[in-house]
Length: 356
Image (tube, rainbow, N blue to C red; front, side):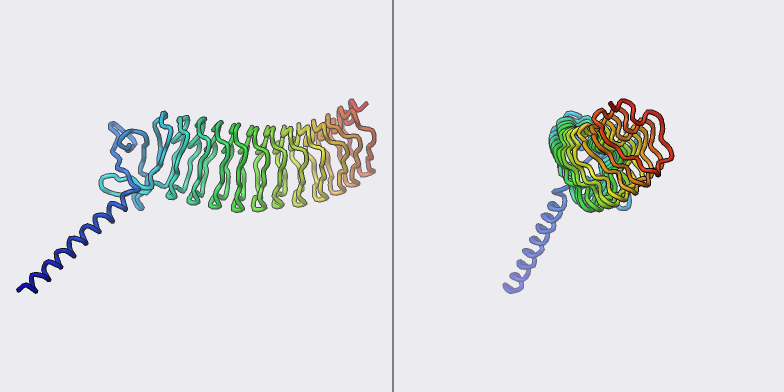
């Protein structure tokens, strides 16, 4: 009888421990989840946390997923949860929506490893944001995502990201360093426009496409390594990068776009590789630090004002150049010697105007 009673007691203890473990397990699972409630009079079924600091919207019912779509503008420290509980169901937080944190007073933000997408203008105009860590789960960063985050000083792009959209870091005046991964294949239009404190940039060889004016007006930029997968330097890529002293153009490049290096007044070392076929309008206009230049035999055309108002004293033009555009060397007041080959059949007006 006592033996039977002992077995029953042991069985009860086992059941009790099992229940406790199960309960603790459930609690642990919910440690990374917060409960949210439907916002009253919400026409788009928006849900809010208990203090109204974060707002969510269901983006998928299979699997259960939500996006962060808005936030209290006054919040300074943000921790985005991995999961939210809606009607006793657990939804994974997988995206940060369009303008979700725009113009918020956030200083710090924690993004969980469940986030896959950072939407367009998600953190635009967050002027107090100084640093942010983007987890490896993120595969897509939308256009203007960090536009005008004027306090942002550094950022590291994870290996999971393959492209930087247009205007992503435009007007990030305090941005001094950025790490670009080998996984990246493209950088969009004006991605770093007016990042005036950015000093060095390494474009990895995985990048085969960059948009126009990517580094336009990055006045503090002194050093650049260009991907050897690029076939062109697009229009205005380094326009008015006034601190840029030297640059190596890789042999993969066949064209240099309009205004590509315009206003790079400190540029004093330049070699145009023998793969380049065309030099665009005003490509090196206002490069007052340039001294001498050899235009290789591969080049067939020199655009309008391509070297206007530059510091050139001597130029050798390759024997494949057929046309020289209007004002190509206009106001090159230091120019003393130039060799024009017999291949030139077209020379527009004012090519040497102002060359005293």
